[in-house]
Image 1: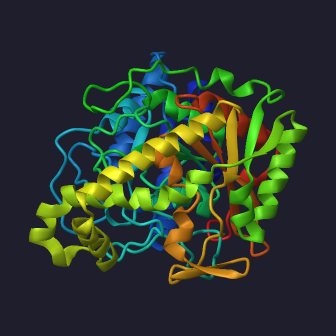
Image 2: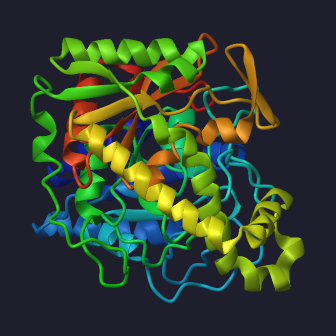
Image 3: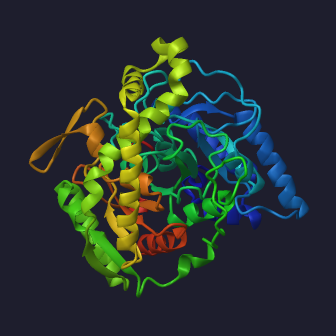
Length: 470
């Protein structure tokens, strides 16, 4: 029974459709595993056991009746506690948001329409404002790759990364403002997809920064990410930033050839990474070259301005949302989150405008390089996951603030809005996961997912199971 908890979403959906396994069996197996392990792992803030079992029984009845089935029929999904689920509070990982939602978020609606079963709400860094994944109110999720030392699960979608890698859900929905899907994917050894800005609706998702927020899935394979994206992508009138661009067929393109694809290796990113990260990423580049990809070095000279531009935008936008809550609940915030929010008050309007102008220059530079190659390849993080208590990390022979290191390779692509998929590509000598990210042209998720799946078909890094989740 427990083997069901390690199956990919694509395989579960197929097995349910072919009546090899019942949706009730699948949900029961996951609930049992959550009950067994989540007291320590803390991936979930709330588990909807009764509702999930009732949905599973309805899904089973639909299969037996021969009804048309959605592409995720019977697949359990956990959602980060920023996504509204009707009748349940959207806490944002806080301790003071307790009002139940009146409606589902658009993503949850589309997941249900595709046949997915919502297992519960997943843990996160409070209000999605931290890359470490720490939550002092509900307990910090435990990164399962180290059974003895509490390491950062990555944030802010910490519970999503832990749930997927520990067999507590085959799919975890996350959000990404500066790397919050890709950072936990890298720390936890999963696939994390940040779609193009506007590709997936954010309606009903508690925002952090309106102009930088993206939502997407964390999964066990690129094929699973393609399956989920197919279910949730598309225009939504409830989200003003939602794009009318046509939705590609992400699934059928997965088996396409790698031969002939031009892959731009961001050599500067590679050289700035710790050796424990650098070598697996370079080995992955060689694997893609052996599969027929044309790998060559490229550069983004303006990328060094991504950090200041991101801070100039996120701070004021986050403060605009939280100003009323800070007046009434200042003492209820985690100190680190409150400090960053209050700092947003002191960003001048001219700095905000200059940040948005810099964003345009950065987008132009990335688009220019992607006019010469089909995708970019870089490490997702320059480090392996450090202990949760770390405020600084060592990268080669230098020391850096841990928070800045975690976002240093990811936040650029929130500013530019390009689609990015993070993929596990190896392990350090300590047995900690290493990840690469593939960056595509706007609305060309199909190409990076095809390349990611080809890489996973040629390697086995994504099949390893963590020691803290036997």
